[in-house]
Length: 116
Image (cartoon, rainbow, N blue to C red; front, top):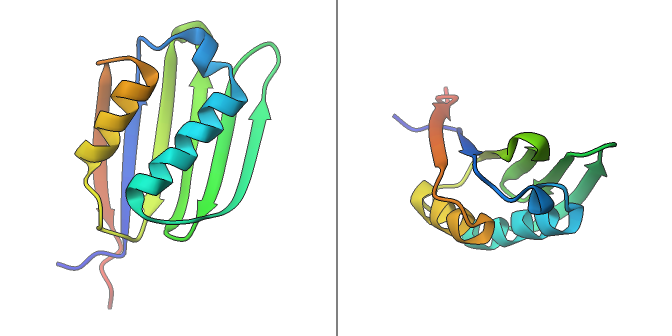
């Protein structure tokens, strides 16, 4: 069955809280993920919460990617909602494992929207 959208949910635990509270680090990591996906960034928005935590979202040529962090819990989640198939989730996870320095990563991929 053909699908319209891949919704990939990635959870990272045991991350360094300093990274999870650094808006520039997180936005740069998302931009690097888009390079793996072979898509371009159309727009970016990042917000640093007080006292801690960051949400960053990129509108990309393939839809969007976001990260939400809880530094106090060493936790981040990343959502990719994309309409492309030119990358594997394993490529993204390997990159995130290296970038965030954690082996504690889980993911789920949901295939959505069968075309009429």
